[in-house]
Length: 97
Image (cartoon, rainbow, N blue to C red):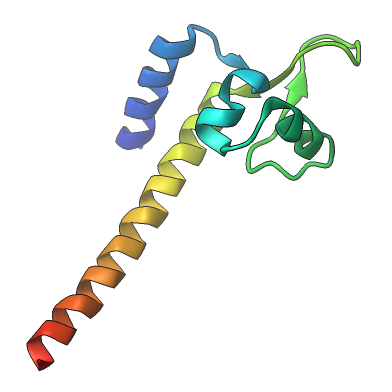
């Protein structure tokens, strides 16, 4: 929980709102253009839920800051686990050579 809070606070400092426009984070956090992110959001194929504030189809699509923080921390943990597994294999290889 502490990691999520740190990530959440940093995101709050960056965006100053709990409702972040998808286009503002699509490249940095999802590695895709805003148009691609919008298309994936329409198909519910992003790793976080999206929503529109307002009823118009032209309203900007947003993601919740806590959902983004949890996603970032989950990816970080997955990367750490993979890193540890690779390191362990490489260390065992060194021991056998």
